Length: 361
Ligand SMILES: Cc1ncc(COP(=O)(O)O)c(C=O)c1O
Image 1 (spheres, rainbow, N blue to C red):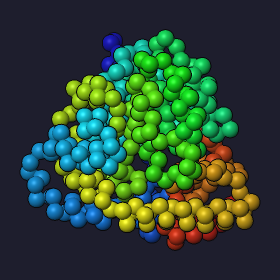
Image 2 (cartoon, rainbow, N blue to C red):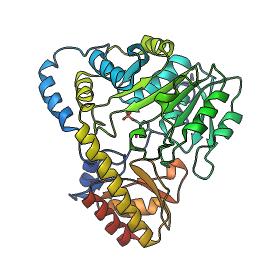
Image 3 (tube, rainbow, N blue to C red):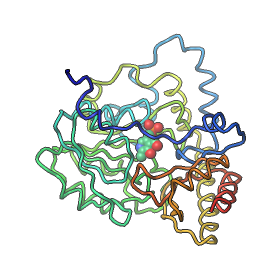
């Protein structure tokens, strides 16, 4: 019989998302759980965005603005990037899919570090492409290893900076040198979902690097810093030609009305941004202090999440904590079985995490 499923799809497993609070509580019959598993904003959504969503909801009988005029204009002004070099997506996830659907033909080759964000490989393989995964070196992205993995068939290279799940960031100097060594006809996808959380001034910033490589796509999101993960809105900066081709494939109304309006408002919510960064930095400090006290190892981070090495394996700790209503992330699917990944929460959530970790250990 004819094989029904597309080549490459059979070997994939569904993306393992952080367990939703409602699902855990339904399964265990408990309440008052906390989730530190999906690198979300613990403060909730930007209040300015919420108010805008309420106001805008009376226009939901109309289709969204397919050109994303207001949001793209605002992004253009904020980052000083021409309007036609900006593309909006239903989350930055959709833009990863769009770049692959636009530029990758079956059999083409791509490269990623590993472990990294699991979605890249899933999308490439689903599109019939091949992926070389270059192992991290000391939990940092091995840029030399990636350069060595380039073949004449390489079409796309993914770099997540700072990297998920390690939280490690590449410096501007290293990134510049890397981009200069990449052949001009390879698309580099630089995923900067967590760039706003970085504190190391040397960290590469894709917006300063757009001229360093002919085909660089910089991806960003409103899901993390602005707390809009549930609305699904991300954006990308790329040469006009890349954006133009992606627009030919893009669904005309991929970025919905509420998401566009909320994101436009959130860009003005500087007090929320400030508060978020403060909560993350203070939370990280508290958590690291307590983990040091407990004698546990963790990986230094430039993001709102980090890896903790847990005796007895990450999966076991994940499962034990789950039963106590604390959702963290097991790192088995990232090939880091000794670790859990946690997102920095509110002060009371961080305290509960530490108390629960002590108990289950
Ligand atoms: C590295 C990375 N890129 C992209 C995303 C997805 O972002 P969005 O919500 O904009 O699709 C995530 C979400 O966890 C992520 O960790």
